[in-house]
Structure formats: C-alpha cells, structure tokens
Image (tube, rainbow, N blue to C red; front, top):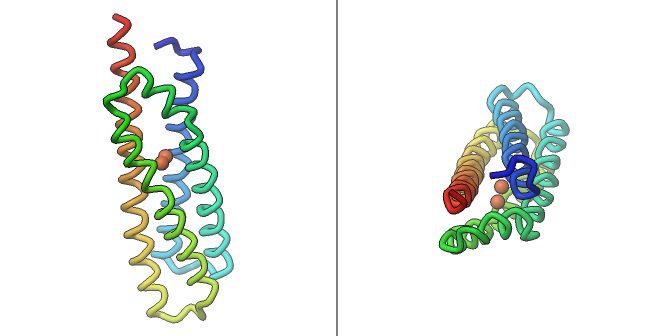
Length: 148
Ligand SMILES: [Fe+2]
Ligand SMILES: [Fe+2]
C-alpha cells in the first residue's frame, strides 16, 4: 500500500476518528461514574457525542473510504452494509440519552439508569467501531496482497 495514496490517508483518518470517538465516550463514561459533573455539563458532552456521531456516520456512508477499500475486496461488501445499517439506531439512541437527560432533575435513580443505558450504548458503539477497524484492515491487507 502506497502510504501517500488517498486510500491509505482515508484509512488513517477513519482510525483517528475512531480514536477520538472512543476518547469522548470514555470521558462521558467517567463523568457518569464519578457524578462530579452537572447535568448541563453532561448534556454538553452528550450533545457533542451526538453531533460527532452524525458527522462520522455521514462520512462513512458517503462512500468515501468504504467504497475505496472494498473495491479491492468485494466479498467484504455484505459486512460493510450490515455495519452501515446500524448507524441510524445508534444515532437515535444517542439522541434519546440527551433528551432524557434534559428532562431529568438528577435524582439518584436517574444517575443509575442513565449510567446503565450509556454503558449498553457504549458497548454497542465500540463493538461497531471495532468491527469497522477490522473490516478496513482486512480490505487493505487483501489489497496489499493482491499487488504482490
Ligand atoms: Fe460506522
Ligand atoms: Fe466508524
């Protein structure tokens, strides 16, 4: 793989976007566990996550890196499509967390319930991103192999 190629750069930029997303998710997770943030601060973090997810998913759906990487590995297309199909539900879940947060008064039960829901959301999102990393890695590895 040519390290200066647009495909390789797109691949690297998606890995970087995944690292940024993971860092933000970790920040929210820690804030929920520590309970040291205000509801307003938590709302800002969740809003930031929601915005970032919308942009990130749009970038992936735009065809850019997926289409490029998979051109060389068409057998991976079904897996890519299955991953793309998970985006709307994850966006809805992120938005629902934010809406519920804005209507709360911050009682004990709410913290516990929100923490649980966020942990479930986090697990799903991280699994999704990990599968994408793996898919892209396979696509690029096969691409390199095909040029040997
Ligand atoms: Fe995705
Ligand atoms: Fe992703």
